[in-house]
Image (cartoon, rainbow, N blue to C red; front, side, top):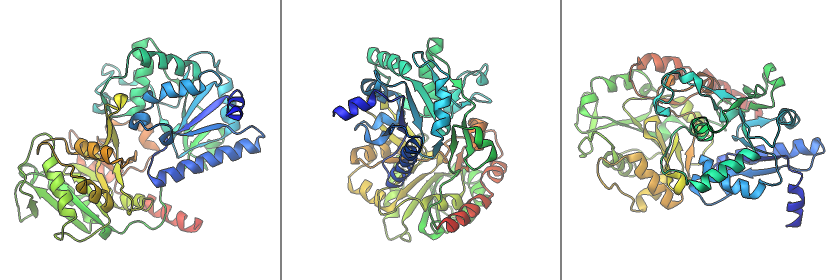
Length: 454
């Protein structure tokens, strides 16, 4: 392809859209790609290289970025200056971005982004920097982030010398920053004020090279509450403290909800699935729920939501989000974690933030013969392995949260309309629900604006 070789010589910036395989997310990424190409045309520039991450290789671990760096180095390491990563809802003003990047010597190792920091040491970052959590900065991916090609090449050498560890991927943006920093041997994140997370229409956004398109996607009429079957996993010891919180907060908005326990308590009521409670994973219980969902014991719905008894969730916001997904596809949605992604590995939806399945996904999972290797195996990870074997994508939404609001950077939550949080540890769960998840004016406003656009 001589044209490609010739054109790559001129490529200052290679864009990588952190896209996903689900059809809605492919559409979102294509919209962003088209917008960048139109801007380049208007500026009379040659079209930039724009890569959709999910199309680059067959490696499931590509979304964790580090396994992808050798590919980017081999393709662009000699004839480009920057790799700019964008989330699908990042919006870019190309001319302003060029102005920002021109200020930096591309031959040096640069790691650029909008900085986040922890207020207190947090479980999702393995309590790193517990002496001074604010000391370490990591990028908010929503604002876009960039690596100079010099840094991409040196990270590639490091990966080739010492293969990536087989480990958990929990909060990717923090883990990427830690890997690059390498205990002080590599560069720290350089904060760029023009990389922003304001909505693009806000007056403050005029100075920004990047903005965020929408706090929460809504694609039409919200899914009706009677089309989502809600399964709450509990056990006898939590019937008196956790279940009342569910009932006082979010369960009122559910049309179809059942509590599954190791003990049938008619006062709640709970259903004993015949699976003993386990201290660790809940694989046996979760698979019994999947089988029940497809049985004649419960009303037929397009969607299944499985949560823990200490999950806090906004069902109206979930109903709005699900308007973007096609339930005839196998959809598995929530907060995505990974295991062993540097060596192949697999992705999974972490259970505490809530796991959402389309009926088609449950049909395919159970038809595949996938099952638990023990009742106390981690349900979310076993499901991830099965989905990986089926080549069914695990779809990430940053609006689901495996931990409490205080476990996330304030600036990160500031541009979200969260759908869920998890854990009652050291918090008042009812106060947390009322502050973060109760107000549904946001989804009502979005629905109104969507109707106007339609």
